[in-house]
Image (cartoon, rainbow, N blue to C red; front, side, top):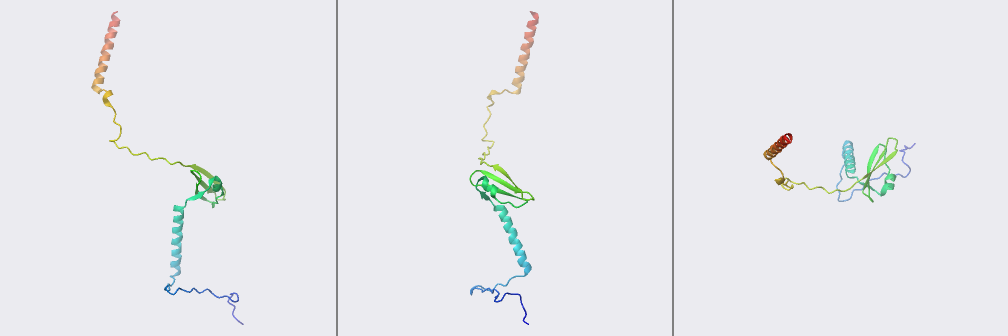
Amino acid sequence: MAYNNYFPVGYQPFVYQYPNNAPYQPQGTQSEAVQSAQQTMNQNNFNASQNAIIWVQGEAGAKAYPVAPNTTVQLWDSEEQVIYLKSADASGMPSLKTLDYTIRETKPHISVAEKPQIDMSGFITRDEFEQRMAEVCRQTVKTKVVDENE
């Protein structure tokens, strides 16, 4: 009785043919392959989360964009200055928040030398203020004395 290797009849395993100019590079150990695959996946996930700007066309495009459960994505509108935050709860029920954004100009920093100077010519010193208050008090006293004499 012949041994059955469970391959279909006529099956030929694939044998990779290296090009003539490329040297043979043996594969590393299995643990090295797993580690390199994990590093590649981590880098791809990091880059995707950092650089992912998802453009949609209007609110209808944002509503149609699929979101995984327990996930929130930023969707940038290509037609208006709007950002949509689309979230899905644990059951997959989506919700949509609309944020309007505007571009504002930055105010230049004004140094002390560039600040407008206050005109001090209209102010008096503390000594001048006290002298004028003393004059007012003396005039008030004189006026009371004259009024009492009449």
